[in-house]
Image (cartoon, rainbow, N blue to C red):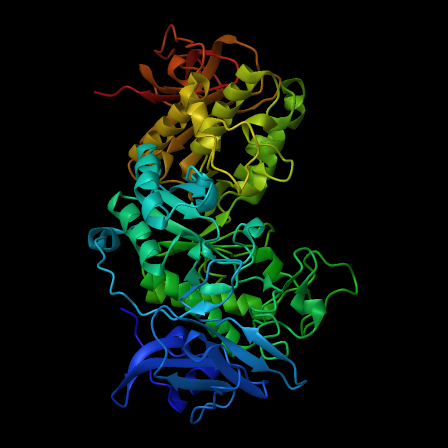
Length: 627
């Protein structure tokens, strides 16, 4: 149930001083009873406006009918109580700046909006949705020793109706829950589901920071979606964009005729790459607006975490700017000290108000302490360096991979500096970058073998996992946000085989503590063979620091079959193959091992060794057989 605060000077002062972390309970449209009269209270922040009026269905959109006034003790805020307003009606604020220009603005705190291309906000009374995910919320554990395997998806193109129109949240929920849980994932991450005017932004140019997009239904429909996934054992993460917002005149841009939500100086307040405005992190009301948005999703919609977009663009004042195009901070440096303070406050508030929720940073630089206590305070950080190096290596013609052998092992140099998440996201399969399988060299068979090997290495190396939709079944075309995934390809065994491989990787990842409990500890990974560049062979052990349980990964990343390849192992005994990417069920040849009993002979610094048959472009996962 939505909680509404009284519109008093006390609470408005708290918002001014950054002490009100849920400003949406004060501002926006609230259906309530005032002095015995049922109606809607509207309130908006517009300190530089000379006049604000409410327009909507209830007054024939007449900008002269219902002027708003300042509430007592609330200079800078405007409010009005409308007995005529009702649930489901649309409205805007007619905001007149000091220059006399009037612009009709959507409500920054709207709970829902009209379907684009319309832009009006909608009065929405909480429907008291009956949640059924209490068991999930109580047991939720997304800590560093837990398996986290994320399926990133775009609701508008995962599956569409027969008319190529969007499906409703309620239609998508059971389909996604069954499919994603069936593949062994632990989480779903939704690309931009907050209200946005332009489909082509994929939801990353947000106008409604408190509103699930109307493309797929109502707020209650979205709650049903989250609830359904939770009951299927899936966590739900959202992409969240506090770094910038679009210049659309009906949105936040120059909201009261002046730079209000954005920095005034374009050298700090305008992002040239995206043609968007940058939030002013030095303004208390803006900081509370953003923190309130985060809490809205985590508290009211039971979201399990937020992936914060474009963190580097917020941290650095000179991000993507040339000399003279940016303003230094008060110390003359290039760090945005206000954004740094914002992140620390954000993560502190989130972890206090929504215990168990996680915050993930998409941060592409070596900024220190992103996931450290006393640092920015995130729970996880995308391993952008690992992603770039690994994709570059796998994209090489195998003949030349030996010259770049260290690209695969370099991650080990810094893997414990942060709590990393190994992500291959939508950004890697658009804008002529090709799909993941299409990036790989060779014929169709070699590409699929290469993709299975890539996924085997991604799931084998330390770090939580994320993969964008479609890559799990070797989608050959680039992602297109305007149409469904090509599900028909799963009728072909070569695509089905890759999907089965990904499913089995997920199952092994979740069931074996060695594959996730040591993700962020030095002892979680030890290299057996990391220097055989001529053969492009890698071997490493994943270990659970607690129990000592371990698994052996061996990969051959050339199209050359290697018979009887010597691999050192830590313990004597008989071994068994848990996974083989060359298995026939995955679309491979089904290469077999002739002898899996170790020999008391030195290899790779170990006192025992195995002689393994390594199929071309393959990954083996083995374990020691124990009584």
